[in-house]
Image 1 (cartoon, rainbow, N blue to C red):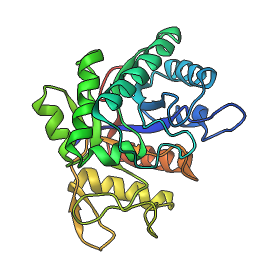
Image 2: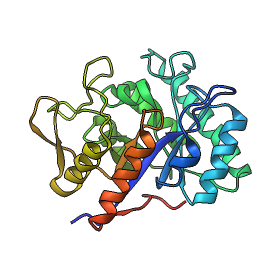
Image 3: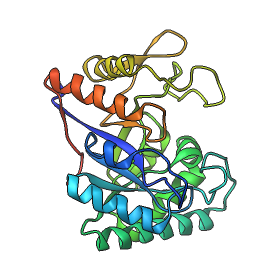
Image 4: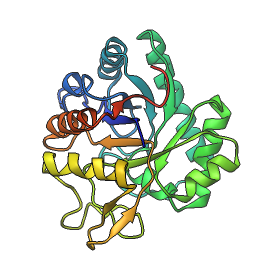
Length: 255
């Protein structure tokens, strides 16, 4: 029986006068924060503020690395060369490490964002570029990736610790892949249903796919997207239901 699980969210995604999500509220509910690194979202002052709040709440920090795609919020596929992608990821981790140090905390793991996350789940070349970046800057940083994906196998083969992730607010296909955001029903919104679905994930080892079939998903961490409408209520109901059932919310690394 699982007695604890990590609950994470993508934060630090505001940019100047443009506000994305409510970092202050969600940091009171999650155990890990995937903080943007400036390539898909996040301005330096805003990132520093989020990191300071995470430190105050005892929330673990991860580098939420992305393709260089501010206009597309990092959700557009890019055919980046391996050397360039490796350098981009090193750059982003290093930038967040500097800001985290100034905030009195540190980067504890790496989680790719958006299109990069989805691409490396199956694209071995780009996956290895990201893995090489992590090994180059700090081989002790775990890599968070889609549960059941090839990138986690590759990372383990290269000696990295991996964290399998499930998405609370996203629909799954029967093969364990995420339903594209371009398709109807890809993003879930009913907070109570989402919480019950995550309890099913933990207690039964899977969720019901968009095709209506039970799909095994073995995860160490659950993500609630910080930019999703109702994200705060989703995170609150997930946490409340799991704790009611004796399942603690706890970071997979120290804060």
